Each structure stands twice: as C-alpha cells, then as structure tokens.
Image (cartoon, rainbow, N blue to C red; front, side):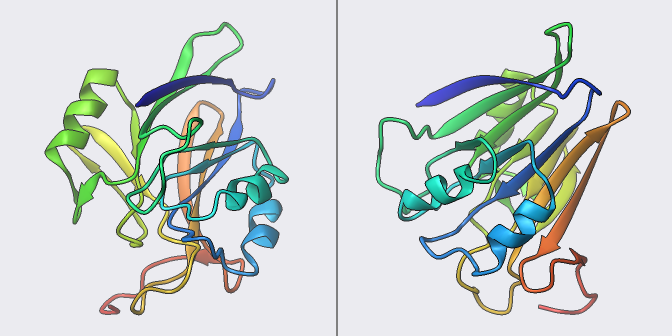
Length: 190
C-alpha cells in the first residue's frame, strides 16, 4: 500500500526532518534525547519498527510518518511506501520524498526503488534496511539511508539522519546516538 501526505514548510521556508530506521523495538537509550536536540518539525521512520509503541514514543517529539519494514506486521496505518510532499507557502511542492524500507543494493538504488522514485518524480529517496548510513546520488535521485538507531549490527554505528531545508537548499547529516555528535564514516572501518 502506498500513502501520500503533504507537509508544509515552516513560515521561514525551512524544515528539520529527522529520519530513523531499523529500531527493531529497541531504540538506543539516548536516541530520544539526541533526536529532541535536533528540534525536528517532523520524524520519518523508514521501517523495521518492531513494536509500534516506538512510533508513539517518537510521536512525543514530533509528528511521525512511517513505512512498514520486512520485520513489521501489517497494520492499517502503516504503508509499504510513502510519498511525502514538503510544500511551500503557496502550496507548491518544494521537495518530494519517497520513503520505503528496502531501496538500496550497496550504493545503488534497486531497480524497483528507482522505478518508484522516477514514477513519483521524487527528489529524494529515503530507505533503511541495511543499517548502513548513506547519502549519495544514483540515476539523478538523492538517496538517504539514516542507518539504524536499534540494536548494534556487526560493527555498524548507531545513528539517525537529519535533513534540513533552509534558504531553498537541502542538507543532510548523520548523528551518533552514542555521542550526539555528527557522525562521519571512518576510512577503512568496517
């Protein structure tokens, strides 16, 4: 099932959107504190939520939009795909996001995710599943994977993503749930 939503930008034309994924019922104990510190206008969960109470907890920080991941049960309010239009004061779409759980194969978009993003005219595709934080571009589409704020998988970081719109520009970053600092990959780590 595909859902659509429209979210207006703030009066100043900006928006802070926190993106999380792969909580697996157990978000990092400090995740809420660091998410709140980012002062999000909106939170997007890119699937593998686990217990739906996770969405209620995030909802105490900001409005939440979420998609179902491969571990999640079907629930009436949980879509498989989300098209999220961020709109300006005139109601025109300033940025279109497509959110789904599985969208990447390494640094490349999966063929089904690319077809969906193109069909919807997406500016940005948000996905989770791999637990690997990523931002890049493939076939003209910006791809943003927030990583995971759930239990550590292998030696991967426990991070979330922040997407900020300000002055007509979009910026992304990852934030460590362990330190609250901006997370950057370490060359040669893995």
